[in-house]
Image (cartoon, rainbow, N blue to C red; front, top):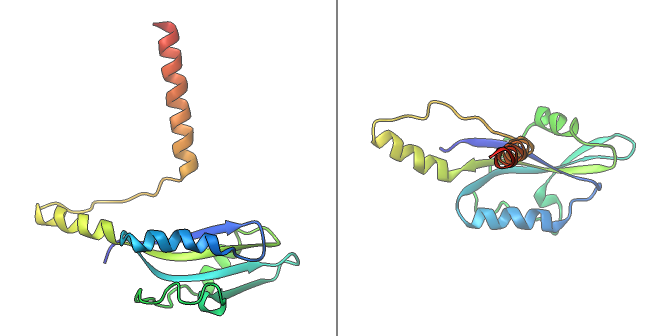
Length: 144
């Protein structure tokens, strides 16, 4: 099995829009990832938290079909996701297996290597680093 990642995709409304799921379905079709499980978590304007399987929504029914979906996202995960949400918003909580990494790891093992570690770097941090490098490159050009 490849690495599995818990992802919370938050949206500013209490109702999840279908296009949010459509993009994940496209990624799934590429066979780079497998959607292991997914839930919609909602925090109402009053602060109440609820969770629902995708199949409970007519427009989302069948999204996990044929994927070997498992019910692995539990109540603790729902609470963790809800803690990230503002009142009056929702999230698509997804458990994704990175199939591409499993294939890469097999090749590494066949060559005598192993996966020694893995760290997820938030996109915001990458943007900060890129901006700092660009600023530094601009300073070097100005001095040169």
